[in-house]
Image (cartoon, rainbow, N blue to C red):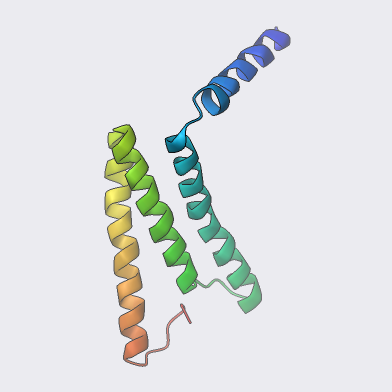
Length: 112
C-alpha cells in the first residue's frame, strides 16, 4: 500500500514539475521565490534589530513577487491568483508610497 502511494506521489510530482515544465512554470517559480525572499529579509532584519521590523526591501520583494505572480495568474487564466494578487499588489505599492512620503517629511519609521 505504501509503495503504491509512493509511486502515485512520484508520478504526480513528475507530471507537475517535469512533464509540464515550460516558461510559465519557471516564471511562476521565480515569482514565488521572490515573494518568499521577503520573509527572509524581514527575519534577518528583525534578528539584527533585536525586535520585529519591516524593512523597505520587504515591500520591494512583496511588490516584485506579487506583480510577477499576477502576470502568471493572468497568463494562466487563474481567477483566484488574479483576484488575490491584484489587491495585494496595490497594498504593497501603497506601503512603499507611505514609507517614501514619511522619509521625505523626516519622520522616523520602522522601515529605516
